Image (cartoon, rainbow, N blue to C red; front, side, top):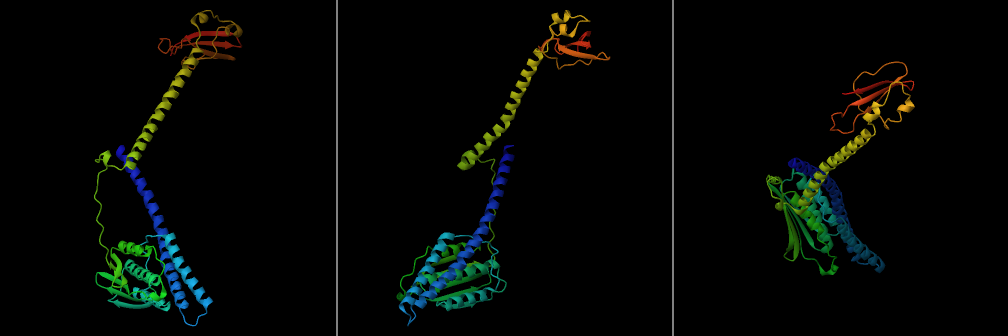
Length: 366
């Protein structure tokens, strides 16, 4: 019984966990896409505004407005990352176009915004798994976003290599120029996000300074490694001290609930049974006709005279003897004793009346 209850509780917890994880994954997918896409677009807006600010022949108030646009767009990127945070994604969230065309358009957008980008693709990208395509796209997108925020005037090289077993993505930029001034520092959420995406795809992602610049390197296998099955453990054989405290508390609560569920009906039944027995004894004591009073009764007496010695109520025990029949005939039954252990327990006196006149007396046994 204990094992059955533990198994049922485990299934219930797993069901709630699966439902919660499904809802969280869907919310995370939507929020992460908002972070990736909007963050990239806002970074390009900030980069364009910075380039406009440095354009020759621009009036001072226009230059100031362009600077405000750049600062506000960069701040919006940071606030967007703070609000959404690091979120996981669904594995089936893949681009609809081939990876090469998608990266070409992505780098072209960055170039049109003022970023100096060179794209190199080696190998064939035919029939790549959707997870690999999406992960590679996000690595390039987030790396370009970081360059646009922190080194917008640096030269960027995007090198994608498709091998037989994996796809390797390297995004490297040179040192930033001091002419544009310092850029707002980010919280690193984008890099952590692409690390998580690549990890979920079964690959690895490294990033850090390289020479005077910065590089992001991701290796994404085309076939993710199989996850080892967790070892089967017996929850019955483990001692209580090996269980977490919340499990022990839950077990104690379940034990108390089980005892309460068992004892409450028993106690309720005992109380009701005692109440019924007490009520029955009280009712029986009020339906006993004294043998001496019965001996003084005579056929032909009036009901009023007979009722002077009769108890308050009749007994519920009715012997199976046939009653006298006739017009206007009514019979009443009274107990001989209220003691359950008396030999006369269950015996009864029967008094029959016809038109308020006693016409029959009988002592009956079951």
